[in-house]
Image (cartoon, rainbow, N blue to C red):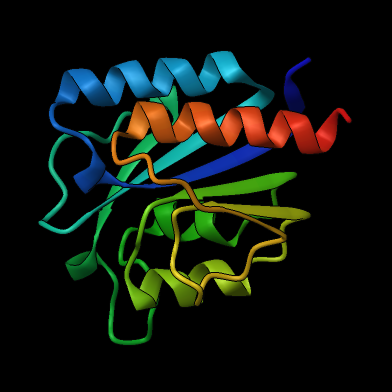
Amino acid sequence: MKYTGNSLLVIVNGDLFTSLASTTKWIKLMKKNFEFKSITFILYISIEANKLNNETDHIYSLSEKEINLFGQPKNKKIKGILKESYDSIMTFGEVSKKLTRILNKNKSRLKIGSNVSKDIECAIRINSNEKEIIDMTNFTTETIQKIAFK
């Protein structure tokens, strides 16, 4: 069985990817493993956001510099995305304290963190020794399936 629902927001530390090809491969894996009607991806990157934004596929980039002094994204589209309520929010890897505060304010039903800091509020926190994002995702998927479908 697969983890399903209406809406899923996925936040991932973009530094976990080695190339644009690995990012694309990971997004396909996420869409295969999680059957939600709508999946939105935000890649948190340590440098200024590049051209990874693709509204058609619901893929956006966000960097630390793109969060203003009040702790809100400067991009109105991303600000709206982060304020929406989702069936689930999944976060992979470490993100900034500013983004952590934004995620903690979100009122989504279920928050899942994979290899995230203790500051991020999660109903399910999964820690693995996996360093590669594909392996981390597979481990997280298997763990969620074991929890959800006992």
